[in-house]
Length: 248
Image (cartoon, rainbow, N blue to C red; front, side, top):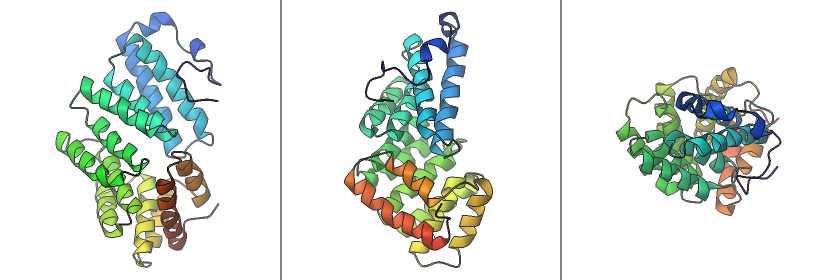
């Protein structure tokens, strides 16, 4: 399976997924983009065993949708996120910036630009993008994800106290997002706050019992080959280990 060219054949035969007549319907295209977004989320949150298949399915749907409606801002944003999750962060950022050119108020695209920069050793730029997304849509239903991204960037920079602050904000906004608890646990453990870290792990496992360091490592290392990004992962995994996240 190859991600280098959007015309490459996928394991899933995208040409058979959707009828041309249906693609002429803007509402159907919106549904197609929404379905692709669900694939991306499931792959990103490790809810699917085969993450690559989830991202490939999303890319097939988005390529099909955008062939019918090229100026679909959310379609470009989700395609950008697929790129970011599959070692194409620079291309993903460009897709999200294109989405913003089409809809300057698409706050999620602004946040995803910041997310992509983590994988390019530019995590120090992420917080500004998250702050702008929150300015654009302070009550957004996805704000908890953006806050978690800001915390993730701080973890990569080794700024554990700031990471904890962002993760706490994310949890306050939505207590049902499992990933943030494991990242919070890592930051707390690295601050030697081992009285607090295990409770964060328990909360995360209650939401996603299958989470493990091995699965997190495989997923995160699959997102970028940047040597600084990869090196920054090791303290985070060590923090998770100290906090009591299962190894396998």
